[in-house]
Image (cartoon, rainbow, N blue to C red; front, side):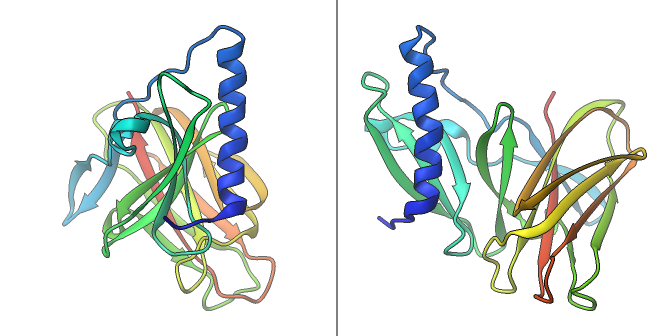
Length: 221
């Protein structure tokens, strides 16, 4: 098993919060499914691709899925925290490698719980700062939906080797409303009542380093 101490420590810290919740009398809730359907525009036809369900990410003896992150040390590698249902303080770290035609992208649910996803590259929105690394890089997309839906969008920035990389800031703008976060490699935004409007994704690298990004969207209702 690969060891990525800094990131696994971050996942472990989240796990300790979950254990504290159990100590207060609230049980850990088993996560099932993938919490939404990825919207994929393929050959001008809208499709939905299911990701690896949460309950299939952990081995049988540690079947309680807690959280996951995309590794910053290796491209397309997902780091996963699992636990025993009968002994929730006994944890197990495992990993999963996305397919060659996929990318790993983090999506943070609320409260701050990260979940990594393998998505087809052709399903994401790619953009980069290769021409002018000193300026903002942006991409925009409108998603075809049948009436208002609840949407979760996420973007992630990568080095040219496809390792997740921290940038100066990331922002997502929807109907004139700008939400942003500083010094991150990923950003998640919830959009309720989405009805096909364009969503703008941008990042600023903060250096002259070449950076690329992918954005993705999930219908959650």
